[in-house]
Length: 65
Image 1: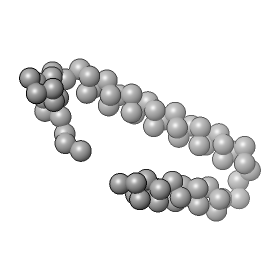
Image 2 (image 1 turned 90 degrees about the vertical axis):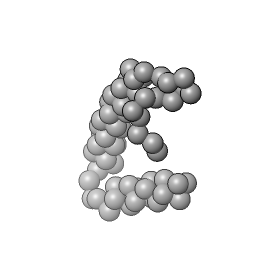
Image 3 (image 1 turned 30 degrees about the vertical axis):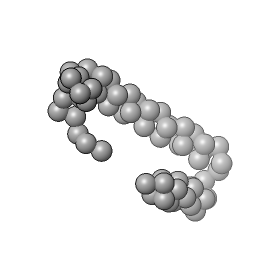
Image 4 (image 1 turned 135 degrees about the vertical axis):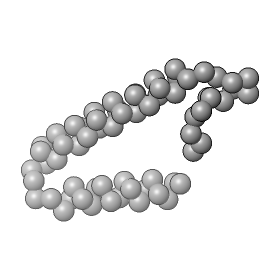
């Protein structure tokens, strides 16, 4: 998993570096993407928190990771 995370990050950096856009535009785009990711992560977490907890402490009907 760590290798996949590092590769994903490296790919994103390379993608940004390949663009000839100004650095401020790249920063704004990265910030907007982060905001979208945070909103989606918050939705998922709220959904997980709203699911009933079983006696074993696992979420009922939760997907395994």
